Image 1 (tube, rainbow, N blue to C red):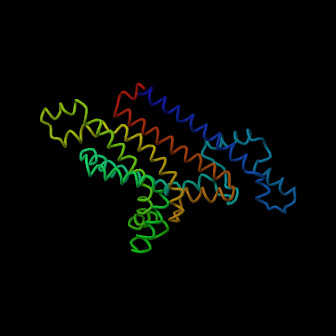
Image 2: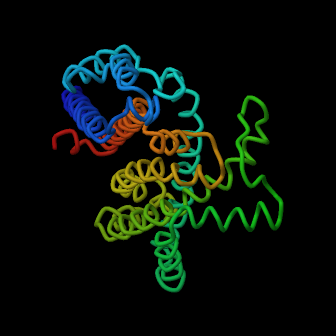
Image 3: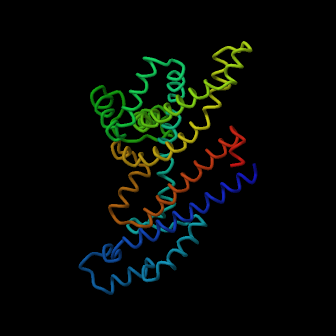
Length: 313
């Protein structure tokens, strides 16, 4: 087990290093004449050169990357070129907002998807076909379109919840829930469709295995066979899909946060990209990469716990 975890940890670190290196060089190579953009197109050349030296842009990219990486290891991701705020500080105030939406959507997706997948697997026929059609339809609708429909219906027409904005849980738990419920639903529909289909397929395959018939022949209640054995057998493939959907939801939050005017990483990424604020964009890239690597590591760990054969793969 320890060797399995070490292999996964090394793979995650190497993946993170590769993402950081590729992201850094692509962003800085595409930034253009950053110093000129910052001081204005009509500024004298000596002012531009002074600004370039101040930002360290007069050095080679390899040296700049080395300095950035050395700072990143210490938790220093540099400063925003426009606001002067430390990048790490800016991201730490926004990351919890995006994570609250993502984790809420993942939990909702997991609970609803397991219930729907189990019902579809046990009730083959009209119920199964209806759930499959609904799942395929939900998966085909973009999250931003779902978000717009939810805003128009529940925020503007019915006035049940606010249309935009974000209230921190420390200020009001009820207010916080009212501001995240629609974004969470918008983000979770596609994941519910994907995970429920995976649960359904895995449970149907498990129900055909000999051990299920043996357990039933021994007199175990059908519900106990489903809950303690079949669902555990189907959990492995579902966990892989859940991990993938976590990454998809985290990425989709960029668009959904714009619809609901929520101050998360999405708003930061869009604003920084529009301004050409490369250090801030790079900070968003590395934070996203860390989240993805940690989620994949957690999924691998759960897979190994559920299925010992995975540790030997």
